[in-house]
Length: 141
Image 1 (tube, rainbow, N blue to C red):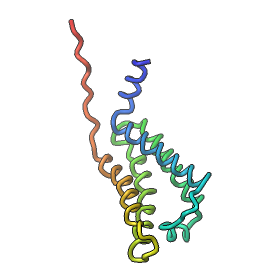
Image 2 (cartoon, rainbow, N blue to C red):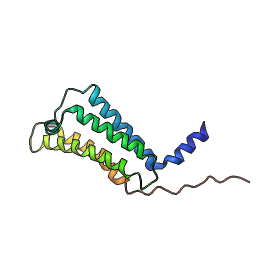
Image 3 (cartoon, rainbow, N blue to C red):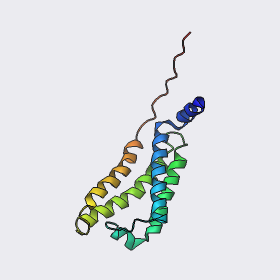
Image 4 (cartoon, helix red, strand yellow):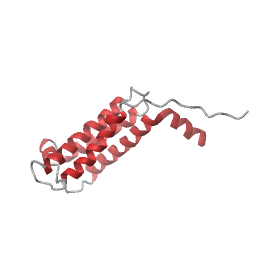
């Protein structure tokens, strides 16, 4: 089992691992929004004027699937996954931010805006990372 895990880890690399985590979180978050929304739409007023919550949930799922598929692409060709996660997290963050200020509808909107903003911003940082060179373990002779 251990060689298979090592081979998978080498194949994915760090960028792929990050995309796998981000993609999984996005798929699960989106699925949660479509299957059992929390009922509290504070902060999402602007987005919900554009499309219903089910649409946004499926958009999260789609972004997650793109990230998961991109995780298996070579470094620097995996950019669609990073971009997809950033593109779905940004309107979410902005909606919460605007609900806090200037609209004043949701007093904690800035906190949730920071969380979703950071979730997406990690992708902007990671998209520029080079995959570190792999060092083969030294064998004793």
